[in-house]
Amino acid sequence: MGRGESSASPVSPKNSFWSLVRSDCVYSHYIPATGCISYAALANHIYHPRGLNSLFPRSGLPIANCLLLNAHIGAGVYLYTRPHLKVLPPVTRIAFSAYGAILLNYGSMLLWSLTKIHLPQETPNWIRTVIALTMSAGILIIGREYVNYVDSLV
Image (cartoon, rainbow, N blue to C red):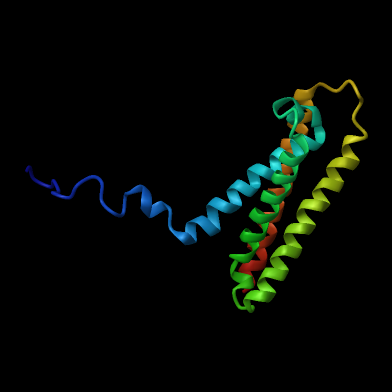
């Protein structure tokens, strides 16, 4: 070995794939991330419902319900793992997290539905998709900033 070279293998436990799949990472990052993806897909479904039905002709509604459920779980787990709720008992944390997730998802669905009716019928699908993804990203970013601000008060 040359000068300054290490005998450590490049694949150490610190650099392995399994170090990224810890339970704290799963709960604080991966589940909320899949919830965000489902949230954006749900927004796209509301603005362009025929898109999901063309991908899954016989099961469009169950798929949309699964997207909603996953968005609820993602937002709820995200809120549950935040520092400002860690001082509460688990039952109260679950109740507050579920309440926040339900408000976020159903409030967003109401907003998307109310803004969708103001689009002309002949609006191209790609514009509807851009609007849906932009609105969902904006709502999620504002929500994250709000929760980070509340966490900073603790």
